Image (cartoon, rainbow, N blue to C red; front, side, top):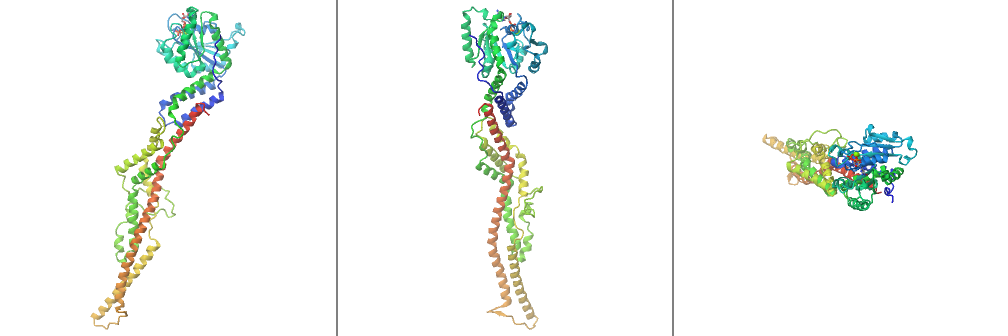
Length: 555
Ligand SMILES: Nc1nc2c(ncn2[C@@H]2O[C@H](COP(=O)(O)OP(=O)(O)OP(=O)(O)O)[C@@H](O)[C@H]2O)c(=O)[nH]1
Ligand SMILES: [Mg+2]
């Protein structure tokens, strides 16, 4: 029975291109996030497949591969019906690939340029003498490869290179060496994803007694099954007898007519690459993003490193300082003003630009104390923690990529925090109306006391000089000047006593207000310098996962 290439399901070129584009998208998404060495096969695939698809789809490139002396060149010549590739007794004979093209050479030439077969090793099987005999093979580009088990290491490298480029491989084994480990472990097993474009021939079948042939074929079939090549076509051939290649020729005719081999080869390549990348993406739920608790902890650590507690303490102190300056007893106010404003000591104005908008221009550096070693390490831990919570459940090298992204801009954070603090409108008032009113009241009662004192002093002076002392008006039992003096002093103390708790309460509110604004500002730094890079990696991960799903052919 003729054993033709079954080839499996047809490969639709558009589907193949969609899958290839998905591999390309995958590579774009993971660029810079995953180690390059894991991506080499995918890059190679994209490059090769793109070129192969752009070159002739009317040609099918078939390679004869096998151990030295198995009869590759003999089969090549038998199929070409010409002595094109030297057959030798000295092994190895074939050192470079030879090609035979059925049909016009023009279209095949570019393909052979790309594959790398030298022009002097290209032959054409289009002879007027043949008539239509060979027309069934039009479109076939047959390659005779060097041996892969060569004493010449270069042969093996050349074979490996060519096996990556051809559309279909005919593995040629002979009765003596068909069970050799090398062909099975290093080659056939590696091709299990290319079952649809693999064919095995047991050549030199004439060297076996006819009754032995089925037994050896069965044994070989068993080995192929173990290689994962269940169902690949297996033929017995004899290169030295013209009728010994009839079945193989028929197989090639149907393969060439179908024009599916190049597409199936590439589909198999994509399957192989996708399978090797599968561990780089994981379940749908993974990579949900930075969570609220992690973000809060990060903001807390940033606030610590930015010196927010020191600034808010200064805000409260500045409020009290300024309020005391405006509402305190007028006679000691000046002395108070000599003491520095706690906010100005940090080079913070306390209020934003006059428009009330946060300052846009570069702001001068503050004198907020630098973060301590403990604050710096707390920030480092918080960044690591937020990355671990965001990407810890991702597969393979992704968690490291997320952590790397979270830390990528850490060097800019101290300056950014300083700018954020300096640019925050802390909303500490200079002289609100109620301070001015209380201040005016303090002046009033002080002036009252001073007037009373002056009056009393004037009375004593007149008395001492023996001058007539005008009668002091009385309020009840108390003389008016005394009442003015004592009343003014008492009222001053009273106003101060009432004002103090109000100032304290308002100062605490000012502190909370500043704390909210500063927290929002440092959270913005965390967002820009830590969370945004983390999200970018997670987006890349999601893109990569979706792309790989499409590349795998799943809709
Ligand atoms: N009896 C018999 N001899 C064969 C057959 N095929 C090849 N030979 C002989 O086996 C020897 C090696 O054949 P080649 O075609 O040079 O083998 P090859 O696989 O090209 O070897 P390398 O180029 O060294 O890799 C030659 O002497 C051939 O005449 C066959 O089917 N039957
Ligand atoms: Mg040879």
